[in-house]
Image (cartoon, rainbow, N blue to C red):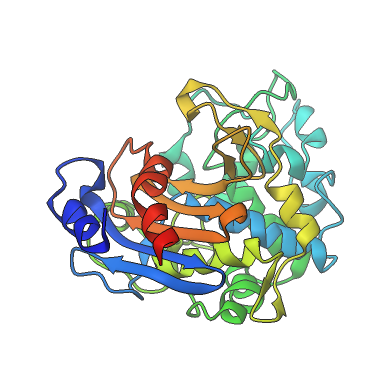
Length: 331
């Protein structure tokens, strides 16, 4: 498939590709392919959904590198000395950052209580209130977008900076990614609009009433921004001679810790990043709508794909490898 054929294919798609806004590929540090649809441009920002989690993992690594966080075995409650543990709760004391990053932390619910958390005054505290429970720490994988909110509080309390400022100073601006601002306190209608609106967004990050960013979703990026992040990781944590994050953390962050089941495509799970294959060093940050940072270190190719909200898109890695990588390799 040629570049023109791929553009037409996405433009005319009635299936999973119909929501794609942008594709950008970087090879050996240079943009070699970029295309846009639905009125989006190369620098248009999109709510990249759970790709936000992958960015949070990088920010956690930066905090470790800078000594704000000692390591992933540090207890979560170390960062919240003023938090009052509920009477009778014992397991929360043993939850570590490792549990949060690998989605093996225990929670007191069967399904995530979105309304309860997202109507509270402090989403981080509301997430902490859900942590623990009677089952104990079993090591079982439990995907928890709300639970990852705790990581934003960890970074803020460890560094003494708001998470948005931490991200701007240590990740976005050094990489030439536009400075982001918080979205601001919201109501139910605004949250729905942020999820469903199909227009380009500003460079922002959704936030709670405390101006703390949503750690599991709600970051806006362009496909170009995401491809740059992917390239930085390929390049050992360095972007244009600037050290962003240590190569040691990248190795730790992208090493599989768990083998997931069929619901998650039998992929390996790392620190909020996925490993699609057991026998290839490819890794990815994946979000709803098919938003993805795809990283192929062997071929020195990173790909960012953005898309407006469309549920149950599970084939973006296959789409990239079938349609984008062949084009990139010919360039």
